[in-house]
Length: 304
Image (cartoon, rainbow, N blue to C red; front, side, top):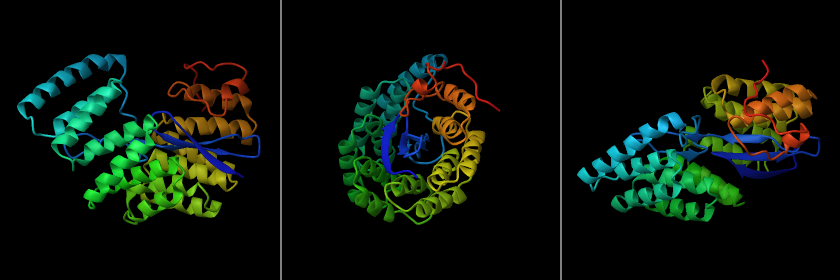
């Protein structure tokens, strides 16, 4: 039975559940939602099932550069429109220019302090950079001035609170979300792992899954809750379901390596799942590479 909760980050929010058994940790993958366009809310930790749109491969870098040039031109044509500096920030995140993106997003907010997409993306950047105090200040101020803001932003604030150990504040802000707010489900699961009874965590995770069973993140989080209640067989099926929806989901891949290795004692299967995980992420909180006695190649494949 897990005894405590700690956190680490890659391109989106996750948590590790430490166990007194051989298991040292399991990932809770709260995916980053990505949306675009004037009505989008940008990237948000724990916002729902999406992908990490904040990275592009080399084949797309030239297109990204062209898009940045086009966006700058449109900024000059519409200097009072907050969308264009926001969109420039999106493109700069995609090209790993985080500092430039922060500047662009602040420029968007200077034009319109109520522009939620810029706040959302800036919050996500702060989360990845572990600048939680800055994010909390940003979101608290924004929500106090915009009480009808999307629940995605309340969920983001709750995740920042959770990361710094402010669980009462996290629960309070989540209480302000609509009961069926899909954007808050992931945050509710993560916060509940901080001390709720295992059964309560399972119920919260199941509600999130029932609300959106096409979410790979929800299946993965439900698997975490099942492990938390001592049901590894069902947990493994939940992780598999997550990977059927998103075969590149790092949290579920790492969880499969954990569950096969420590719960089903299949070292070979665990090694193969870890190899696949390393194709998409680099952090290794449980030091599985050492467990398998070598660094695992990023070109490994997962078992059927």
